[in-house]
Image (cartoon, rainbow, N blue to C red; front, top):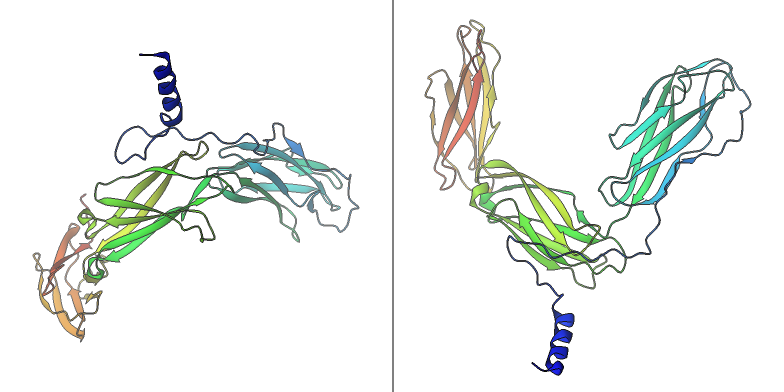
Length: 370
């Protein structure tokens, strides 16, 4: 092969060999693009609030007063730990006792210099914030509880802005649907968070084969850049609650993959409320009645054709309320049971879908066997 051909081949490889196609199934994910170098720098050392000195003492009650209204840590990368020292004084004429410090979140922590501060005395509160994984503004409040009757709680807000190239919207997708309405679907967005970032989706993987994802780029006329991802829930999602995951792989080094939690339920056209019956322990001569409502979610006419009670413990009374809705009164009476009884009532209907609906029940006894 001549030198000229080798030279041309090298040029072709350099131009086209680094372009990876979108992945369409399980396999290696293309390497993400590196983040630009001109990003906001991260603080490397703790900071501290200004200290104007002891305040003028006012009132006989102790009172904790911070020298600043809070602290903003600035732009932070994901999962970055940042520390800051807040300064406070006892602005009252009686000793201040700190009884508790609350951060309300595992992502924040606070460390006191002392729990007792004399009038005019100074204390510090070292606060630490983990920026976490959610893009955008992150705000928390540290609450300091004291023995002051007039101002028992002093609040110190802390916040930061988490840098991201892309983010999910929403971060959790909730789907509630019935098969009578047709195909069960849901959707979410992958938003561009950094202006000018050329977001590309390499692959979308779901936790079930019949949870199908379809990716569509948002039009350029859209206010927010990014992608819409439509989900279709297949036959395995019928008549049960579910919790699944969808993972989106991108070209971002910062956000190479984003994972969406998808929760909800898919029901047949015939619905029953409540879905389960609970009873207290039976007392002699005291009947207990529960009302069950059976109806079609789409409003079509429905006929309840029977109620199956394998245990023979219940008396039932059936009444049509509307062409699409029925009321069933379920009554149980008798002496207290020796052992807890669990079972199911089965309601049969003329519906093509969901013609048999089971309702679990539990009647406690003197002895409960698992």
